[in-house]
Length: 122
Ligand SMILES: [Zn+2]
Image 1 (cartoon, rainbow, N blue to C red):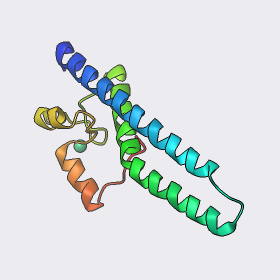
Image 2 (image 1 turned 135 degrees about the vertical axis):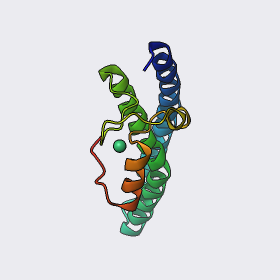
Image 3 (image 1 turned 180 degrees about the vertical axis):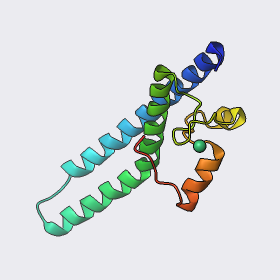
Image 4 (image 1 turned 120 degrees about the vertical axis):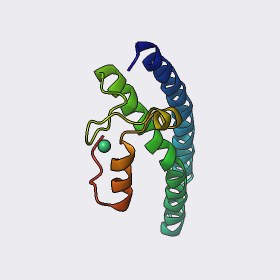
């Protein structure tokens, strides 16, 4: 990939990371204060862990996305950005433009969604 293009992707990803980190941290702070309010009563504890779970699932998407963005930035550093992490083929530029943190080419993504392909650890 051209250096200029790569730099542009890097900028976009870094901005996105900043945004997501802010959101994730805010949600974490909310989760903590829910914890501090906990009374010793078991019923209250259950309610509090329910609140935490709710906050967690709410922030789970952001957290997941943040991980995707982080690993995309890592791939930029490693020089493998824009390649499918499964088959190594180049990811369609339009797809990459829309989803810069895409890790799979469209074929592998489809297989992944059908459950044919194992989700890789990164
Ligand atoms: Zn692939």
